[in-house]
Length: 335
Image 1: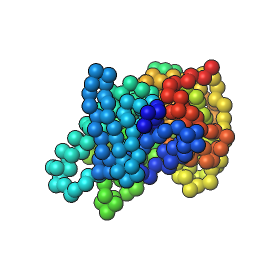
Image 2: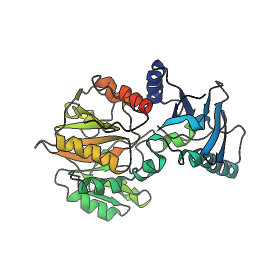
Image 3: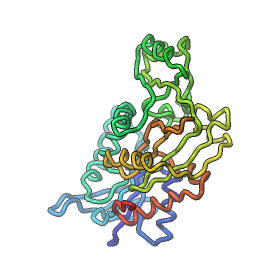
């Protein structure tokens, strides 16, 4: 393969990669996909370091598809997944094999001189919610009063002082890491943002499992802002029209209207600048629109989902934009 190629790194159930890959295929652009839940079992990788950098190939044994690593134009780091190996391993063997596979893959990916959406080091730096809140406020966003704690007394005092109520949310993942354990070992599929009271007995559990608490922000509606290489797509989410989505809009089986919205230029610029301040080329930012018209920053997911937004607000052509950016292989800042 001697034509510049797009590399997608994800997992086998990723509908986002399916859809973007289909658009790339219609443009007859070479594209190679690594599904991490089948790596390294179903792939053969051999890259050698020379004067010009890494040279070599990756082959998918299931399909016969191959890629010359020196031809990689763009890399889309979509979603992680647990590695799969060709043999049954003991617990220590599995831990060691995971580390070796991770170094095998990310070691040379980190050193590639090409376009990334987004670079692994930028993704790592951008994933800390506590740091995001500080950065967002420094960059001009309004952020909710917040506390992170494993001390129940401090959490109760904070909640009691929240005039409009308080919420609890997870720090790392709302899925409760269910995707990282075998199906038979899963005890819960996820936890939405939840209203809490000072006398909630569950608050004692934060001694074991620290949490993030914030003042509840009254909402007119919510906004999902998807930033793709400087392009800003904003969807108004009418979350207050349904009791199930008033606190957390991510109850996707509830009927809630999504509509394209044009944000004030200052808010749109803040979203773009927040994403790029990490060196990211993609971000999915959640905002609250207060009744007084101000926008409040909640968080940014550097690999956040966008298909659900596009399905409910089809005028936001995010899939096409992602495909175009990967094909272009550079950051095409809009005017």
